[in-house]
Amino acid sequence: MDQKTDPLYQKDGDIYSHTTTLTSIAPLSSLPPTVQPLFKPPPNTSPYILTSPSTIFHTQGGGQPSDIGGITLASPTPSGSDPKFAVAQVRKVFPSGAILHLGTFEPPEIVLTEQEIGLEVRQDVDVPTRVLHSRLHTAGHVLGLAIHQLSRSGVLPADLKDGKASHYPGAAFVENIGLIPGEAKGAIQERVDELVAQDHTVNIHFWSAKEAEEKCISGMDGAAVAEGEEVRVVDIGGLGSYPCGGTHAGRLKELGRVVVRGIKR
Image 1 (cartoon, rainbow, N blue to C red):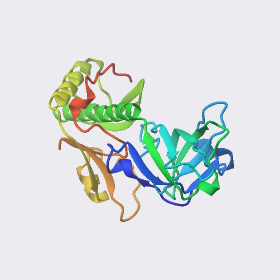
Image 2 (cartoon, one colour):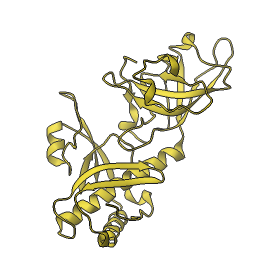
Image 3 (cartoon, rainbow, N blue to C red):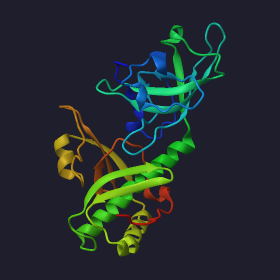
Image 4 (cartoon, rainbow, N blue to C red):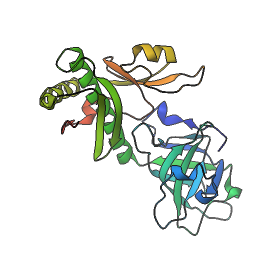
């Protein structure tokens, strides 16, 4: 867990299959006590943790759930075994930057061992789940952008500031610091509809911390960046940018209808 993993999904969110190598394998129960609580393993299972030099699996964080999918050997082992590893959760550990894939083997009695370290493995992301998470995450940014524009135009209070957000299925929301009147729901919905209908492109940039602080709607938004590292930024059609490590749709029409269900205080 001391080796940094290259998060390929941050550069190209449309890679759904990838071949890499296995760098470590261990039961979850063997991990340090500070790391084990990061995971909520499936009940009644014996979960393992796999790592590799690079991954296409999005890690849980930034309000977005982790990807699910599978990891398999590129070819059977010399003994002929060919276990399938079902990825249930993915987390990143700090300060190493290692990305840990939690899952179970199918069938459970056949598992990879340390003898397989260094062998080629294939990663396959569950595409429908990834697409859903990407659409929800992008929709959260669109909603935040709509509120920002209405705040700037005087429809909403000028002192509104971005807060936290969730992009989980069935529990998606954006939070603002400040008061949004309940009767503004219609205006927010109308602006969201306009943005989606305009079908803006969603672009990913890597900026310096200084550039991100100056250009992003909420500045760096508390993001910690090591000296010399760039900030990953999602940009909605040149209208607004946010520091973000998640996956996103390529264009706003891919979202379908984004519904503002209500305003809570």
